[in-house]
Image 1 (cartoon, helix red, strand yellow):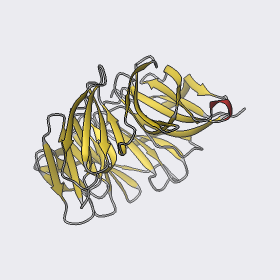
Image 2 (tube, helix red, strand yellow):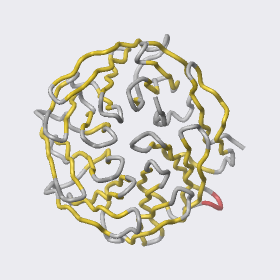
Image 3 (cartoon, helix red, strand yellow):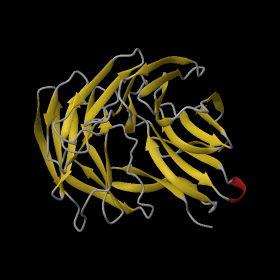
Image 4 (cartoon, rainbow, N blue to C red):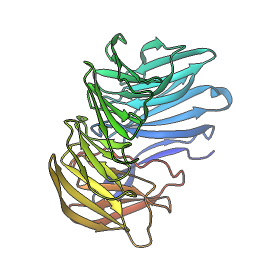
Length: 328
């Protein structure tokens, strides 16, 4: 028996191991963990082995650290997303059948859509719309209520690349449109491509309303076209879900900026905890008070950016993506 997944609750100033969400069957393979756009829910994705081979296990965790549900779904999930209700969208493959599967907030199957023969590059899920980003540059919007296709938008891009993100309701989808662009596309067919002077345009994070995106390489771009450089070619930028601030991680420190359409202002600089280096992944709380950093040591550290202090850490042997659910 081996511990596969365990969640921890951070109550300032330290991590707590209760309440605990744990899975110790020892027969499952960890695949990913993701959060919803407004940081209400986390979904943990696992793949089955043995009797569960070919199946996908989903565990949804609330923002108080408790488990909302766990369910085993037939089929191997290739893509996944979770919304703020705790519904989960899966793109699954079983034999020759490919489906989009939406789970309810209690883990039952709400609807399925057969997408056999359709090339799906990625998915995103809001509370009103489920989004499928297709090969060839098309984007499909489905109703979360019944799975009906609401619109298919031809973006004109030769292809679409991840990360695949969306607003909290799913009205806006955001992705890499290729050729150094960030692409915003809406359920009603509105499209915005924004080109960068070099290969610095891949969206890394967006706010909950998909009105502003941070990129892997030091740019912030607004849906209305305003763009600013906030670092250099080696810097990644995270946007708080509120859209009011951004975090830059570089030189063994975390910089927190206030952002607006025509500029930005440095608010605080927080040094890494002693002995820590690098940033494998990170997340920024809704209003930008807390940062969660997975360092090269596979230690997850919490920083209070408002007061520029290190708070606590724990070791993450999986080295899995750092995501938080938070109401700061």
